[in-house]
Image (tube, rainbow, N blue to C red; front, side, top):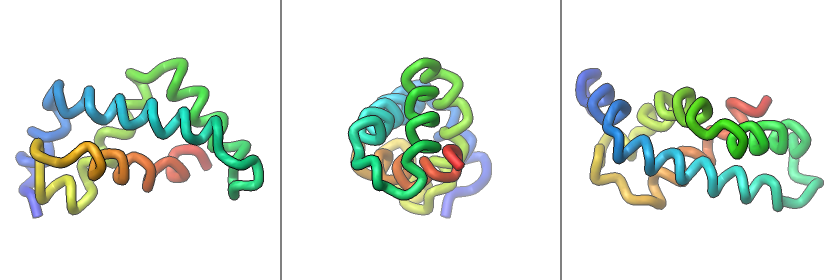
Length: 97
């Protein structure tokens, strides 16, 4: 597990934040195209539209959640795109509901 200063260093790294932003955009696109019968779909669509309309704000608040992921903390700035995407996807409902 990363130390608090290591977590902070990941969260404020511009390249890492840009990667999170890209993962958020992909997740938002996927939500907008998901089956309407998906649980909490209406709330998820509101989140997705917010993510597409104001990606910087959504990145600001999701970054700190993403860096709490144990895999992200373990791999730090070397986290794969898939790991970042999984951390974003796993937290959509935390912000949508």
